[in-house]
Length: 278
Length: 142
Image 1 (tube, rainbow over the protein chains, first blue to last red):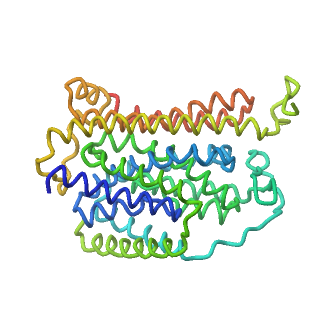
Image 2: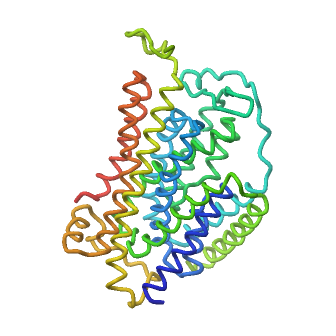
Image 3: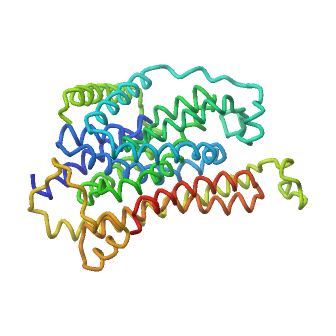
């Protein structure tokens, strides 16, 4: 393929990935690396570098829209970023040392888990939980505007959430993704943060987490300008459009389609990785 | 306004003030978006130069070779831009993009400082230290 054709096709695919990622809330980054490696036969290291850069763009680009609604909690974000950035740094160093087939296998497993999580009903929102002493000391509790007015929430299980976030950061650094699936596990399931707050806060954190490993990737020569350019611009445009039409769109069937795509890509990555073909 | 606190309150008596947090968040959000759009503009400019010159060459990413040092370090990228290379310009845009969240964290140190939230100033400084270590420790500035 010529450079022009390759750039155009990759830009279109990235645009669709960014759009679907934003509409379904599953993130576009998670499908980018498998699409680039399986469809375009890009080396997984170049794919991870390009994906990481696009993850920063979408996170930072959408942040302005989210914060205006006053939902995200910057204290929860900053506190957990201690865990995610250290994890991301570790993940990035690991990525340069383990074989690419192992990367593909881990990637496949993360995709399968994301697909499973996207079909699983969310845990029921528990309201009026008692304040946790540690969360209170760390000033993590907050409130957000809800249909019935202001809703207060108390954050639970801080140590469990913090450790899971370290894992989310490590996966992000290792695979060049936002690792939304693990963040949901940490913030929704462990810390019992309301859904609206956890998704917007996690989006806010993704850019900082990715920036922690981006330096390592760039200096190791994983970030190719010719590949990263269409990926970054495509995903950014797609996700900006996605967050804009999110309010009106019917996302249920879209979510189903997207999770099937994730499942198929996950199996492919797993088999190719086990077969040593990546 | 009720948010005006008597000066000299001890840190442990601190209560977060939602409206101040919100104002800080809005400033941060706009900062991030401006940074992203600015870096996207540079990437697009670089893309125009790159595509105008190399559109009909063969795209090859099957084999990992690692980028040449022009695209791996900050001085290398700047030099490449000086020589008018499109890919150098793209890489410069990507560097700005990576810097955007780092600026956000640096700005948060000031924000929490203004709120006299010492605990969160320390937390934010830890995050900033990790980010700077990643940039300086990985040989990006060599």
